[in-house]
Image 1: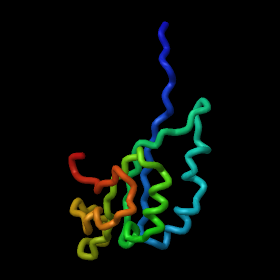
Image 2: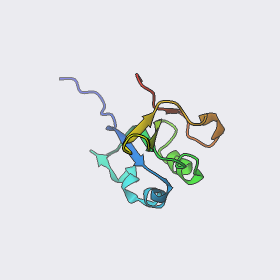
Image 3: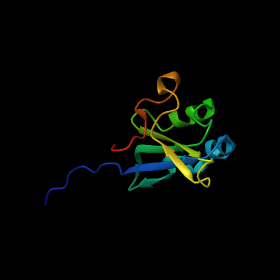
Image 4: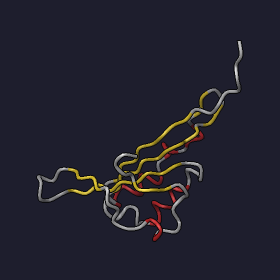
Length: 118
């Protein structure tokens, strides 16, 4: 029987941050310390973080700094979540970015907006 070397377990996160009032809790939470999640002595390999963000969250430098803690090998997908006041205040996802990510020079590499068909 052939057994190859083990690989670190892979994981992804889905972050839902509706507005900036949640930032202090999110940024200071110990739940995102990936070193405490190990399997067989190996640290988790975080491959993807999907960010569902409300108004003003991405523009806040504290959030962008927190994103960078996950490392440059992690892929980041962003989508904005807005409430449409015209239709019963149901959640509305936007596939059209509100601002170019190039305006935020301190985002981690491999960051992009979540788009249909990806």
